[in-house]
Length: 205
Image (cartoon, rainbow, N blue to C red; front, top):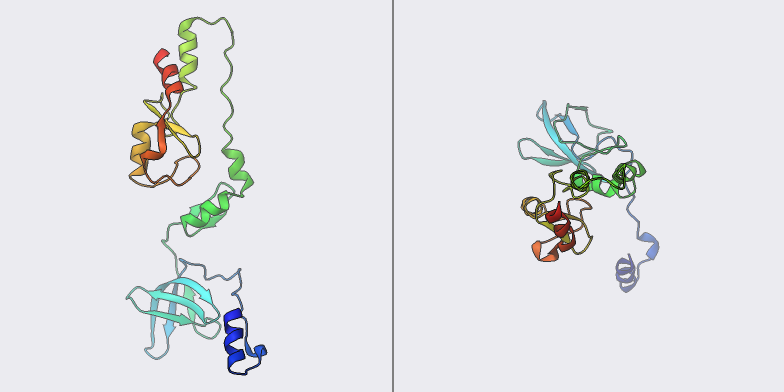
C-alpha cells in the first residue's frame, strides 16, 4: 500500500484513487474443494469442476477437463454436486477441507485439547505388592503412544520431550517429518536421543 502511494505521488496523482481490495465473505458456500456444475451458455452444456478460492473477481473453478476460469455465480447458472473430496473433522464436529486447516483449528479447540489429556495410570492398590504385580503395573506406564505396546528402545525428541519406540518413530518419519504427538517439526533422527532412564526401567520390567 505504501509503495502504491509513493508511485502515485511521483505521477502527481491523488492518493484517494488507491482502493483497498475487499475481502470475500467468510461465509461463502464455495469453499475450496466444493464440486459444482456450471452451465456454459456459449456451448450450451454443463461442465463439472472444483472450487479453489473466492476473490473479488469471482469463484475460481478448476474443471475436470483441465480448464480454469473465474465465475460470478450471482449471474451464472450453476448447481452443487456431491463431493468425494476428503474431509477432515475435529472432535468438536467442525469439518475442514485441508489437513493444515484442521491442525490450526486444533491448537485452539478446547474439545480437542481436553481429549488429549491422558489420565495418570491408577496407583498400585497395595504399596507392598509383590515383584510380579509391580512388573505388570510398570508395563502399563512404559507404553509407546504409537504402537500401544511396551516401549522398545525408547527414543526421546529433544525439542518437545515426547518419547516412543525407535522403530515406530522411524516409520512415522518416513511419512511425515514431525512429532507424532504434538506435530512439532522433526526433520530427522538427529534431533532425538536414547531415553536411557526409561530404558533402564524397561530392562528391570
